[in-house]
Length: 117
View 1 (cartoon, rainbow, N blue to C red):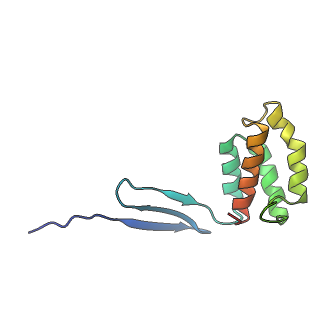
View 2: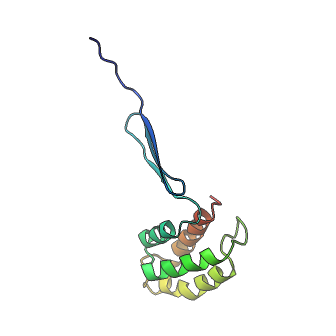
């Protein structure tokens, strides 16, 4: 009896709105993505980036209530106002992320939330 060698394995698991985990080949690489408009994923992303959960939840509620201005400007009017009011928390050390990084993180989060990236 001979044995065959498995050289490639691929698996995809779907949970809810297009969240996927996939792996393939040697030294498996994992890719995790969230579906569009996933409030919980948005909050988790922001918290991991250093923004307190209360602020992350507040922003998630705002972005859920409005549409992005454009792909280049993914924050709507309410989210921009929130950002201006809250960047002082990044500046004074309340958030665990600086001002320039916070701006990039929040923009990236909005792009992912709205499915623009």
